Length: 395
Image (cartoon, rainbow, N blue to C red):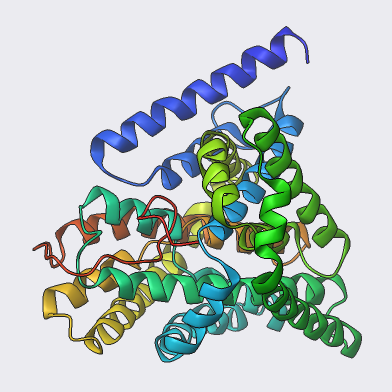
């Protein structure tokens, strides 16, 4: 890299830092601001990147790996399989209310079944990062609805661990019988991995753990990227490989990894979200405003209904049920990751621009609604399993 490369990269990172400060002051998620920054720096933007676009692309891939790896660190394979058994009905309601709008919209656009399945995933999955930040910032960690929120989010994570490799295989070979067989194999592989991880996580974590921060950082980062690369070469994706790698690490190794990787995750995740914006021409967004708004409205209602029903079963009051639904509204990292996989596979060109518009709307509206809807706080049981900044799980 020459001086111009470093100058451009430094300005990009400083610009993202300003946006992070602004988001903290106004109390909104950084995700939409990073996406907008990417739009400004991409093709058709105000100041297109020239020298460092390739480096930003590599940084974005690392950011996605770290986001999903650290998400996996929050749970053990045993916790995920236990959650699946105890909260499967809430997960089915969540899936039934929020996947069909995107899937049916994709079919209506004439995109085909595989592309429509990508859009269904975009509208289905909530942002775990935004949800965890909201619970922390709004001091709702001990609210009675919080365990319900976490259960729904964990089930979405588990669904993503099966959904992403299936889609990755389907786009690699259309929707032929061979592709369907490989997709079934990928899903079976995820299930087998979770079952095996229940038995070997302690031994693996002991192998990775080190009292030296330097050795630990290199070991855990190398492990995450290595597993992501193996998954990319196989029938899954680097994203789901990183998620499963995080699930396989537990105990002191997981605790150290969360501490050591958090700054790297924040840096590269910002680059990832900005890079997604870089890949979208801002001129294509106005045409997606109406479908994005319609999808946002329909799926926001779907998430509120999901939270309302799920929190009703354990006896949470009306305000708590509304709070649960509002926290689930925001979309973010997973929606962008799904769209990114689809765009990389050469699917519907509108998928990226529609997803960016959709995520920007809900990444702003979700936190605002969560702040004011059912805003009365309550005290309840502390959740034992949380995400990205919530109370640390027992691993």
